[in-house]
Length: 319
Image (tube, rainbow, N blue to C red; front, side, top):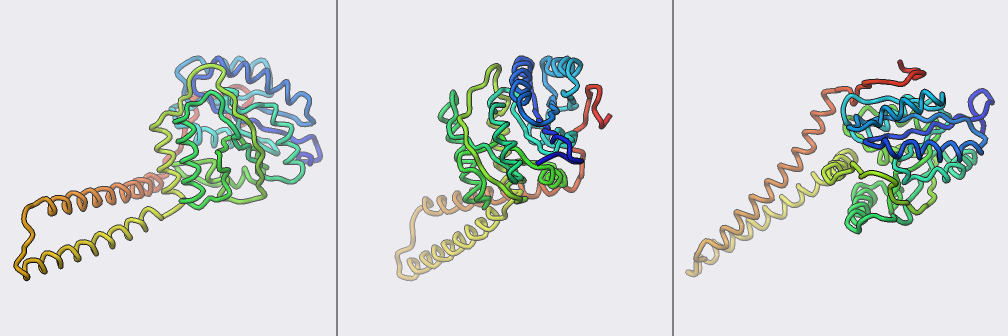
C-alpha cells in the first residue's frame, strides 16, 4: 500500500509524555534506527502532558535537530487518552501508531505492523503476552479491567490480555477523531468503531527510566468511564436489585404479620437493623451509580474543550 498521491506512505508515531525527559532521547534513537530501514516516511509527534520536569525542553531540542519531530505541550495534565487525541489531530500520516515514551512499546514491532497495514488490516493491536517487571497486583488489575470490558461491557473483540499499542489506518483515525467525548477511552472507542481488526502479541519490557504516572485513581476513573460510556447494565442491575429487595421486604412483612397472628411475634431489633442497614447501603450504592452517569452526562453537555495547547515546536501545521 502506498501513500496518498502514489508517494511512499507516511507513518505517524504519536507519543504522549509525562515526566519522560530521560526516556525520550533513547526512544528517538531506537525509533529512527528501526524506521530508517523501512520503506516509509516518518513523522514523530510528541505530546507533553504538562510534565513537571524538562520533558518539553527535550522535545524542543529533538525538533530543532530533526524536522521529522514535532511536539506540543498541553496547558494542563489531561491524561494519556486525551493527550493521544491531541497527537492524532496533529498527525498527517497514512497510518498512525501511538508509542509509549518509556520504551515499553518496542519500535522493533513497527515493520510487522506496517506490513499488516499494507496487507489490508485497518487496526492492528499488539496484545501483551507477558509483562516483565510489573507487580502481580498491577497485572491482576489489568486483566480484571479487560475482563470487564469484554464480558460485562460487551466489547468482546478487545484483546483479553490487554493492548495499548496499535497501528491504525487513516480511515480509522479519521473516524476516531469524530468523537468529541470529554471522558475518552481510546482503546474502547477503537474496538467499538469496527473496521478490519487483527491482533499480534509481544512481551512487554520494563520501563527504562522513571516511574509511571498511571496511578490507581486514574485506573479506577478509566474503569468507571469505560463502563458508563458503553453500557447501561449497571442501571439495569440496579432495577433487578431493587425488585429483589422489594420482594424480600414484602416477604419479611408477611412473616411478621403471620408470627403476630399466631401469637409468636418477632422479638428484638437485630433483624430489623439488618434490613435497615442492608437496604440503606443498597440505596446509597444505587444513588452513587446514578450519580456517575448523571455527572458524565453533565460533563458532556458542557462541551468544554478537552485540552489547550500551551506551546508548539516550529513546523507544527496547527500553529
